[in-house]
Image (cartoon, rainbow, N blue to C red; front, side, top):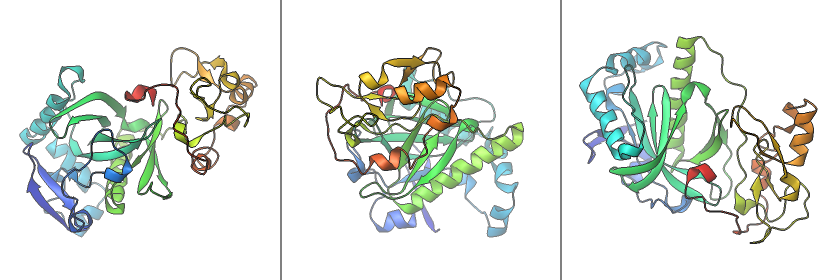
Length: 315
C-alpha cells in the first residue's frame, strides 16, 4: 500500500493510506457523539517503523521487532507518548514506561450500548488505549487501558451501514469497532496481531481462550432475547447478561454470579446462563458471535434504553 506523510498538529508524522487520501478523508470529520456515518479516515502510524523497509525486510520475522526495540528509548518515542499523556490530563494513567513504543493512533467507531460512537485509539507495543474525544488531537477523557497479551481479534462481516469492523475481545470486556475503510481495518488488525504475537513470544504465554461476551446494543432488541415476550419500555428497562451479552428483561436476569475475570463481585446474568453455570456447563452459555451479536442485528430497531451510556463503563 502506498502512503503519504505529513506533519500533524501534535508534531508527529502522519501516514495516510492511499485509499483514504483518494476519498478526501485526510482529516477527521467525526464528532464525539456521532455515529458511523461520520467516521474519521486518518490513522497515524509511527513513521520510524515504516521508513526504509524493503519487502524482504518486512517479511523477516524479527526485523520489525528489532525496530521496535531500537525505538523504545528514543527521544522521538518518548515525546510521542508524552503528548498522549498530556491529552488525557491528570485523570489519565501514566503511559511512559521502559520499553513501551507508540505504534499508531486513530479514530475508530466503537459500537456502544446505545449507538456507535467515535473513540480515539492508541496502539502501543504492549497495550491498547482508548478514550472519549473532547477536542481532536488535544484533549481526551475516560481513558481505558487494555493489556494486549489478553487480546484476541476477529473480523466482522459487513452488515448494512456497519462496515470494516472487527471484535476486540478480552477476559474483562469485549466490543466491536469499525474503521472508515477496508485498508484501515487491515492496517489496524495487522498491527494489533503483530504486537500480540511478539508479546506472547517474549513471555512464553499462550493466547487467552476466555473472553467476555460482546454486548448486544440496546437498539437491536425490542423484546427480551430470552423469554421473547417482555417488551422494553421506559418502565420495563433493558439489562445485559454479563455472560452471554444478551439484552434481557428484569425478571429474566434477577440472579447474580461471580465471574472473576470481569468483577470481584457477583454480576447480573440471565436465568439461562445461571442454570448452566450452576451445573458447571460454562462453555454452553458462552455464545458465538452468530448466536448473539449477528443475530441481534436482524432485529427491529428501538431506541428505548434504561440508562445513559456516555461513560463507556455503562456501554
